[in-house]
Length: 261
View 1 (cartoon, rainbow, N blue to C red):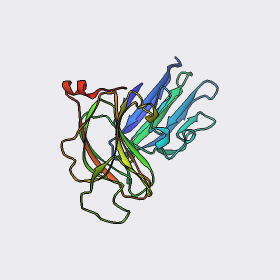
View 2 (spheres, rainbow, N blue to C red; view 1 turned 60 degrees about the horizontal axis):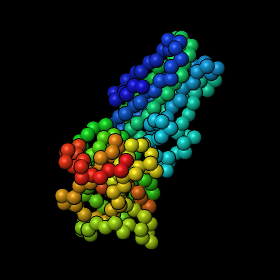
View 3 (tube, rainbow, N blue to C red; view 1 turned 135 degrees about the vertical axis):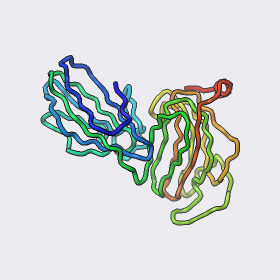
View 4 (cartoon, rainbow, N blue to C red; view 1 turned 90 degrees about the vertical axis):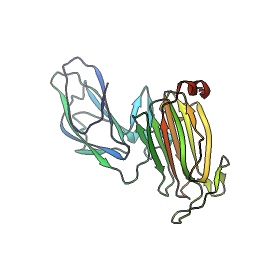
């Protein structure tokens, strides 16, 4: 397994050992990943290359299947010499995965990786332990998540969820609430944690919030699991946005987290 966080050309040539390998790509949160296969030679009888729109590990996917616009069948594509990948492939978020089994010595592939600005970033993996991020639904019916691959203390700095209709500018603070199911749909933000990529296996759920408040005050949420997720669920009836900051929890905060991961 290899992690790649830089654009450029990546080449693999098999030594004939037949090992299964994975190349995990991650770009900055505001980008998506473009892959252009320059060379490709994999015998279909004994080899295979799989391209994942997102990340997969231990049969778990990010983004979680219920929050991705594509089905798992569309996100997980396999290739060999009888079915070579198209010249250029753009994935849906800032992470992608190439898995391959190439048994014949000298066979392999060369791929050029570019990081391209996303006009509407949605699902994101963050590899930094400290930062600030804004999630938006851009007025669409979709769910967006930021997955941080560390335990974190998360502060929701600004929340506008389930309040501002599309095309309307509102500035008043209405406060925040956990009563987020209305006749107009369900819109909320939630913080959760777990030791898995997939949401249905995230056991440490901290509750849901909606409303409008420009400064939520000192309220922080401590997630003591291996993976911290901030998830924005949108009905499409509102222009939702949430800004949050995150940092590693202090030692005493771990004891307070009562994490069930």
